[in-house]
Length: 111
Image 1 (spheres, rainbow, N blue to C red):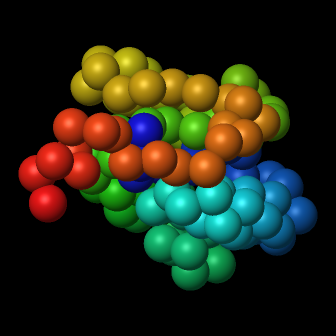
Image 2: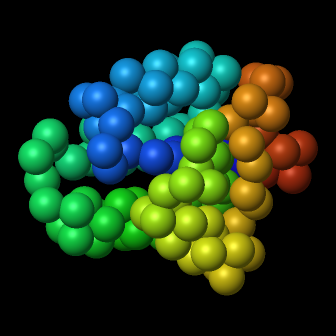
């Protein structure tokens, strides 16, 4: 798990839940992870169907899907989770990512 895509509820929430997405992205980056944050990928007011296209493309470049609280009530997050499962990505709740990123031992040998 190195490149993480954040997923969670946005539609219908104040400021599209951007503060929660941005705070979690900052926390994970401080732990050394690369993070794709939909709140950064899509300017406010972008139509949902455009956001989802951008978001799914960003998801494809990751190896982990991290779910914010409330994801189960989000049709977009459910779609992102279904894709992540089909692609064989690790799926984890953001609250369970607590350890700093450590490069796998075999990857260090390649450098």
